[in-house]
Image (cartoon, rainbow, N blue to C red; front, side, top):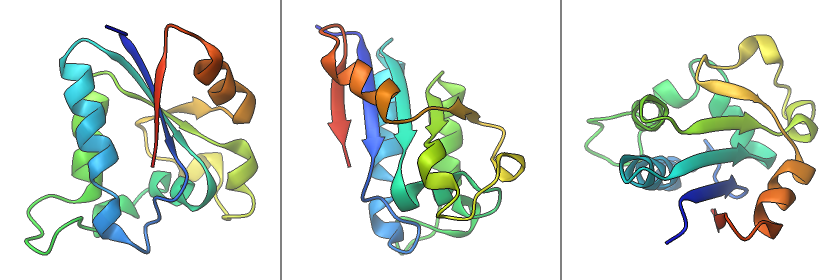
Length: 125
């Protein structure tokens, strides 16, 4: 079984909160299984990394846990978050605005390296 997982958030968008919780829940589950997990925030998903954005959206109507709550759960289990530098400017995101859980900036080349590496499995949302 592979022990490394790279997750690409491409169509996850804070404007559609019902799709924003699952990637973090699954990342946390994988991390709890001792899998090394990295999440790459591309396109509009990079907005989830802005302080306050994910705190104010909820993936379900019961509003018991915000998307940021799911992100924190994953981060506490060791999941690494990477903002796409190419998505930051068009989405008007600066490094100073990023949540503390953001590990750093990484773009297409980093994710493609993971995809091409036999030691890694990938999921795209």
